[in-house]
Image 1 (tube, rainbow, N blue to C red):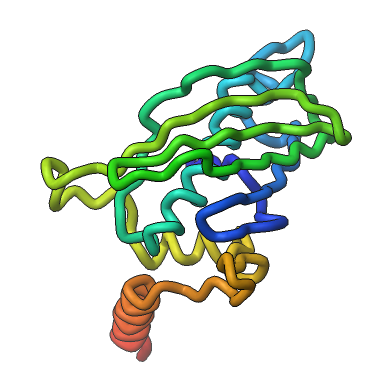
Image 2 (spheres, helix red, strand yellow):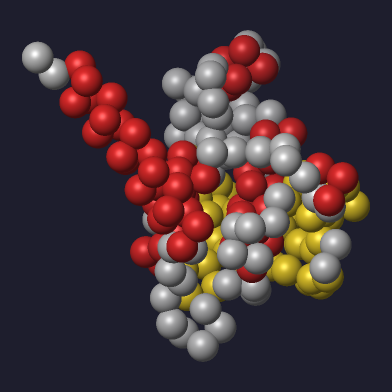
Length: 187
Protein backbone atom coordinates (compact mmCIF):
# COMPACT_ATOMS: atom_id res chain seq x y z
CA UNK A 1 0.00 0.00 0.00
CA UNK A 2 1.20 3.50 -0.77
CA UNK A 3 0.47 6.17 1.79
CA UNK A 4 0.27 9.86 1.03
CA UNK A 5 1.19 12.22 3.81
CA UNK A 6 -0.53 15.28 2.36
CA UNK A 7 -3.80 15.61 0.47
CA UNK A 8 -3.18 18.81 -1.48
CA UNK A 9 -1.32 22.09 -1.52
CA UNK A 10 -3.11 25.26 -0.49
CA UNK A 11 -0.15 27.55 -1.27
CA UNK A 12 3.19 26.99 -2.93
CA UNK A 13 5.80 29.68 -3.57
CA UNK A 14 8.85 28.33 -5.36
CA UNK A 15 12.01 28.29 -3.28
CA UNK A 16 10.33 29.88 -0.29
CA UNK A 17 7.18 28.41 1.27
CA UNK A 18 4.52 25.72 0.89
CA UNK A 19 1.28 25.08 2.75
CA UNK A 20 -0.46 21.70 2.50
CA UNK A 21 -3.47 20.05 4.09
CA UNK A 22 -3.81 16.53 5.48
CA UNK A 23 -7.23 15.21 6.44
CA UNK A 24 -6.91 12.64 9.21
CA UNK A 25 -9.26 9.72 8.62
CA UNK A 26 -10.13 6.63 10.62
CA UNK A 27 -10.08 4.81 7.27
CA UNK A 28 -6.27 5.06 7.17
CA UNK A 29 -5.02 1.72 8.43
CA UNK A 30 -2.33 3.23 10.65
CA UNK A 31 -4.88 5.13 12.78
CA UNK A 32 -6.88 2.30 14.41
CA UNK A 33 -3.80 0.06 14.65
CA UNK A 34 -1.59 2.62 16.42
CA UNK A 35 -3.38 3.03 19.75
CA UNK A 36 -6.62 1.07 20.05
CA UNK A 37 -7.91 2.86 23.14
CA UNK A 38 -7.34 6.31 21.61
CA UNK A 39 -7.13 6.51 17.82
CA UNK A 40 -4.56 9.19 17.01
CA UNK A 41 -2.29 10.01 14.08
CA UNK A 42 1.21 8.77 15.03
CA UNK A 43 3.66 11.63 15.58
CA UNK A 44 6.12 10.02 13.17
CA UNK A 45 3.52 10.31 10.39
CA UNK A 46 2.84 13.94 11.23
CA UNK A 47 6.58 14.47 10.83
CA UNK A 48 6.33 12.61 7.49
CA UNK A 49 3.64 15.07 6.39
CA UNK A 50 5.80 18.04 7.32
CA UNK A 51 8.78 16.43 5.56
CA UNK A 52 6.68 15.62 2.49
CA UNK A 53 5.60 19.25 2.23
CA UNK A 54 9.15 20.57 2.71
CA UNK A 55 10.77 17.92 0.50
CA UNK A 56 8.53 18.77 -2.45
CA UNK A 57 9.31 22.46 -1.90
CA UNK A 58 13.04 21.68 -2.08
CA UNK A 59 12.59 19.33 -5.07
CA UNK A 60 10.60 21.91 -7.04
CA UNK A 61 13.36 24.49 -6.48
CA UNK A 62 15.58 22.28 -8.65
CA UNK A 63 12.93 21.63 -11.28
CA UNK A 64 12.39 18.12 -9.88
CA UNK A 65 15.69 17.09 -11.44
CA UNK A 66 17.65 16.43 -8.26
CA UNK A 67 16.91 13.49 -6.01
CA UNK A 68 15.93 14.93 -2.64
CA UNK A 69 15.92 12.82 0.53
CA UNK A 70 15.26 13.55 4.17
CA UNK A 71 18.72 13.57 5.76
CA UNK A 72 18.12 14.65 9.35
CA UNK A 73 15.52 15.97 11.74
CA UNK A 74 17.31 18.65 13.74
CA UNK A 75 14.55 19.07 16.30
CA UNK A 76 10.89 18.26 16.62
CA UNK A 77 8.38 19.35 19.23
CA UNK A 78 4.83 18.07 19.59
CA UNK A 79 2.31 20.22 21.42
CA UNK A 80 -0.85 18.18 20.77
CA UNK A 81 -2.14 15.19 18.81
CA UNK A 82 -4.52 14.68 15.87
CA UNK A 83 -7.49 12.33 15.77
CA UNK A 84 -9.82 11.15 12.98
CA UNK A 85 -11.83 14.05 11.60
CA UNK A 86 -9.06 16.58 12.21
CA UNK A 87 -7.44 18.57 9.44
CA UNK A 88 -3.73 19.29 9.73
CA UNK A 89 -2.22 22.30 7.99
CA UNK A 90 1.48 21.84 7.23
CA UNK A 91 3.62 24.89 6.51
CA UNK A 92 7.22 24.53 5.34
CA UNK A 93 9.65 27.40 4.81
CA UNK A 94 13.13 27.09 3.39
CA UNK A 95 15.61 28.55 5.90
CA UNK A 96 18.74 27.95 3.81
CA UNK A 97 19.41 26.39 0.45
CA UNK A 98 22.77 25.12 -0.76
CA UNK A 99 24.00 22.92 -3.60
CA UNK A 100 24.07 19.87 -1.31
CA UNK A 101 20.64 20.39 0.23
CA UNK A 102 18.38 22.60 2.29
CA UNK A 103 17.22 23.33 5.82
CA UNK A 104 13.45 23.64 6.15
CA UNK A 105 11.39 24.74 9.15
CA UNK A 106 8.00 23.03 9.18
CA UNK A 107 4.94 23.37 11.37
CA UNK A 108 1.68 21.51 11.77
CA UNK A 109 -1.39 23.43 12.88
CA UNK A 110 -4.71 22.02 14.04
CA UNK A 111 -7.70 24.36 14.26
CA UNK A 112 -5.30 27.30 14.06
CA UNK A 113 -3.19 26.12 16.99
CA UNK A 114 0.43 24.99 16.69
CA UNK A 115 0.56 21.24 17.26
CA UNK A 116 4.07 20.37 16.02
CA UNK A 117 7.20 22.03 14.68
CA UNK A 118 10.40 20.64 13.22
CA UNK A 119 13.66 21.62 11.57
CA UNK A 120 14.31 19.19 8.75
CA UNK A 121 17.46 18.84 6.65
CA UNK A 122 17.13 17.58 3.08
CA UNK A 123 20.04 16.35 0.98
CA UNK A 124 20.52 16.11 -2.76
CA UNK A 125 21.90 12.70 -3.67
CA UNK A 126 25.23 13.04 -5.46
CA UNK A 127 26.83 11.12 -8.35
CA UNK A 128 27.46 8.09 -6.12
CA UNK A 129 23.74 7.35 -6.55
CA UNK A 130 23.65 7.94 -10.31
CA UNK A 131 21.44 5.52 -12.16
CA UNK A 132 19.21 4.84 -9.17
CA UNK A 133 15.67 5.96 -9.96
CA UNK A 134 13.69 6.94 -6.89
CA UNK A 135 10.40 7.38 -8.74
CA UNK A 136 8.78 7.09 -12.13
CA UNK A 137 8.61 10.68 -13.48
CA UNK A 138 5.18 10.20 -15.11
CA UNK A 139 3.71 8.76 -11.91
CA UNK A 140 5.39 11.52 -9.88
CA UNK A 141 3.79 14.12 -12.15
CA UNK A 142 0.38 12.53 -11.62
CA UNK A 143 0.84 12.78 -7.86
CA UNK A 144 1.96 16.43 -8.08
CA UNK A 145 -1.09 17.22 -10.20
CA UNK A 146 -3.40 15.51 -7.69
CA UNK A 147 -1.80 17.66 -4.98
CA UNK A 148 -2.74 20.69 -7.15
CA UNK A 149 0.81 21.98 -7.01
CA UNK A 150 0.62 23.44 -10.52
CA UNK A 151 -2.76 25.02 -9.81
CA UNK A 152 -1.62 27.01 -6.75
CA UNK A 153 2.15 27.18 -7.28
CA UNK A 154 3.80 30.47 -8.12
CA UNK A 155 7.34 31.65 -8.69
CA UNK A 156 8.85 34.51 -6.70
CA UNK A 157 7.81 36.94 -9.46
CA UNK A 158 4.18 35.78 -9.28
CA UNK A 159 4.21 33.74 -12.51
CA UNK A 160 2.68 30.25 -12.25
CA UNK A 161 4.94 27.24 -11.78
CA UNK A 162 4.86 25.18 -14.95
CA UNK A 163 5.29 21.45 -15.31
CA UNK A 164 8.95 20.69 -16.09
CA UNK A 165 9.51 19.49 -19.65
CA UNK A 166 11.26 16.28 -18.57
CA UNK A 167 8.15 15.27 -16.64
CA UNK A 168 5.88 16.09 -19.58
CA UNK A 169 8.14 13.97 -21.83
CA UNK A 170 7.90 11.05 -19.40
CA UNK A 171 4.13 11.43 -19.29
CA UNK A 172 3.93 11.43 -23.11
CA UNK A 173 6.06 8.25 -23.28
CA UNK A 174 3.84 6.58 -20.69
CA UNK A 175 0.67 7.58 -22.60
CA UNK A 176 2.14 6.26 -25.88
CA UNK A 177 3.00 2.95 -24.20
CA UNK A 178 -0.51 2.68 -22.74
CA UNK A 179 -2.10 3.45 -26.13
CA UNK A 180 0.00 0.76 -27.78
CA UNK A 181 -0.86 -1.74 -25.05
CA UNK A 182 -4.58 -1.02 -25.41
CA UNK A 183 -4.39 -1.23 -29.20
CA UNK A 184 -2.84 -4.71 -28.93
CA UNK A 185 -5.63 -5.85 -26.63
CA UNK A 186 -8.44 -4.57 -28.90
CA UNK A 187 -10.04 -7.16 -31.20
